[in-house]
Amino acid sequence: MPKYSYVAKTKEAKTIKEIEDAASRDELIAKLKSRNLFIISVNEVRGEQEKSFLAFFSSHKQSYRSSVKLYDMVFLSRNLSTMLSSGVTLLRSLEIISSQTESAKLGKVLKECSQHIKEGLSFKEAIAKYPGVFSPLWKAIVEVGEASGNLPTVLDKLADYLDMRMEFERKIISALIYPIILIGAMIAAVFIFFKFILPKFVMIFRDFGVKLPLPTQIIFAIASFVDKNFIFVLIGLAAVIAGFIMFMRRPETKETRDRISMKLPLIGELVFLFCLDRFTSTMYILLDSGLPLVYALEIAARGIGNTILEKNILFVKNRVKDGASLSREFSKLNIFPALISEMAKIGEETGTMPEIFRKISLHYNKELTTRVERIIVAFEPIMILLLGIVIGAIVISLFLPLFKIATGGGM
Image 1: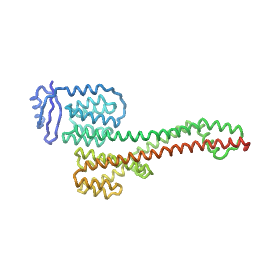
Image 2 (image 1 turned 45 degrees about the vertical axis):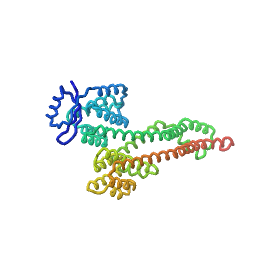
Image 3 (image 1 turned 180 degrees about the vertical axis):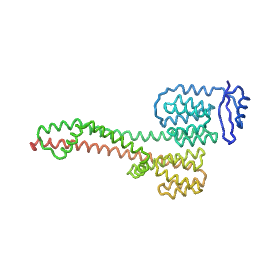
């Protein structure tokens, strides 16, 4: 049966772009009229484009995993945009991507979304059922795309934004690899000393009957405890880490955690910059996609990841909703830098608010990257020095009794 692509509008002026099977063009027009749709155009689709998509995606090897990573969402938004703009229906696009994504969880969700859409839900309503996979940003972008009939374009913008976030995270992770290796090496070295090396020295000095200096007694007491309770030490350490992670994830402690994290030396500044970068970049993509300012502020606040800043932004949102100026409200809050209020004022005067937030987000992105790199450069020699001090203290505590044995003292 031939396929026809059509563009139509509902009574609410919502644009619909789909591809549907029909025996003839006239039959499809009759179907659309029976649904009370206002027909704009109907064109036959030969099918080559959809086949080329199937051939392209089927050439990729699947590897399933249970998690949904940022890469998967970039893959979804980019390919969904490409397929929709090429005339493939939304249902068919979701089916193809669900069978090719590397995330088993995302594939299952996309198949369920397809079923929801077949049952009459919109794409926005379908993805809203999966808040753990689709963020408020995703739902807002899809809503704008469906309302404007420009879903492929806004999805492409979303893909660019997510791709930028993913590249930024890669830079941060790459920069943290060496410090993490140093910390791991220090912990491993200390454990090896206390578990395997120091107990042998304890036995040697005990046989010689050497009177141990206080530093050596402390080190040997720790070594003896670790040697006798090694399994319990590991279990206790794992329990402390697990307890800390559970505490950090509890919603009741989120506000306290966010307040403390912003006041920590060095780290607090990075947390604040990260939140500003996320807020301004989210505002840019939402405003550039055509979302109203008040709605954009609410979504950006929910996705900022910090309850303190979220409350302040929601307060600004409510004031703007009542007719206040965005720049003036930001200037009243001491928690936000003057750059945001001043740039927002320029955006209000020139009518270029999306571009203004793009420039602000680029500024904070660069500043955050620079700060992280500087801290890591300073962190490396500090960790090496700390490792040297710990190992040096252990070695010196061992040599003090050896000096007594060599000189005949303490026997």
